[in-house]
Image 1: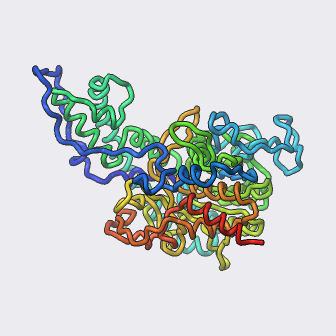
Image 2 (image 1 turned 45 degrees about the vertical axis):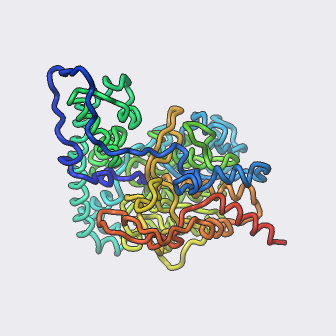
Image 3 (image 1 turned 90 degrees about the horizontal axis):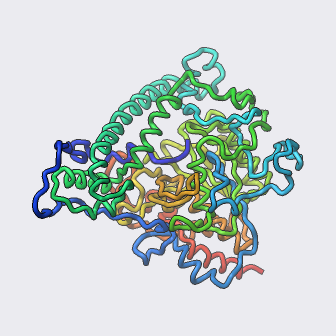
Length: 544
């Protein structure tokens, strides 16, 4: 599943407290002079490029702009680094991404011939492992939990499971029932927020004389009308708690989709692909459409790594080439697709692979492990989002993981948690997974502005955004210091991270309480491009 944060992470206050009833009089009753507006929280907004700023600027960003000014201004990149974005696809027409795309120069576009002999016909920008021969593609899929619960219900399905998963069938079915119920309840709550916004936004738009409401223009509203004043207060209270109309719209779509597709045990889109999914020996399937379905998630991720300037921000490495590998639907990705996507990326020249997805079960983990070992052996750096459930992944893993079933661990792998621009006790994003043993480093993952389909830009939250920040920094180091290996680059990123170990933060997740930031990852740090480039220079200079 694409690692966008769940809406439940935003439900930080009761509806009654955060969303009081707004009266709707038949006609406003004006008074001769506007009175003072009711007290509302002062809502701060993140700058579009906050994640690129330096701690001296008041946020714990990655110091990229400082690095560009002080370290890179007189230098030119020495190589073009290829970053594979295994995701939901990329909008290849976006003006900030078109020039940044990886292009398979050995393939002649749209001639229906496998010109380079790699087994994939017309793979000009990458490949779509959840597409079919008739140019249709999987958009929605079920969750892995749903697929397992459905198998557990049938004797033939149970027989096809491994012994470990057969033993878990009772727990799997119980978890499925609980999560399906949670999704139904959350959707009901989201609908209440939607109804609330539907009541208050007409008054605010009229008062602000705009069709687009922002914290800034709502804050500026001064009115003597009680309904407008109440609406303003409610809007800003919700914004102070991280709930915006865009969040509600996204949540409506996400949870409606979960109930219609994700938790639907009778839904199976795999015939679209036509690969006989249980046959793990089949590796050449799919189609060339790397922007099928809704490529918002992959487009946003790609822009963070290497998008051209736009929307008040810029991608981290301008010398990068972005390889689109579509393997993540709206639902849970399938292990075979991820394994083949990793192998495709490696075989076609990727130096870095970004993986902003994760799930709670991995029935074919051995297949993914083999692909990860292959990438590791080829010196490819893999960067993975830790997930957005507020869990300790040492206890509740988010797959894929760098730890192999047969023992050992991937060397060239970085696991990334999400940090916030708010700093101090909110330095760790409230939704981020964490682990002293399994998460390596944190990176900005709240209100990170990047590219979206159709040529636009908008902020998104999630470890999905934090992972490409790290992938972008890794690519940047490789661009300027080409003699460094993937292992070197990982070492540099972790050793140069801004140490915040002793800062006491709110523990992510629903459990509450406080914890030192250093207990949430192996480094207790946040990635720092400036410090990483300085260390890369030192390491390179010290070698013969």
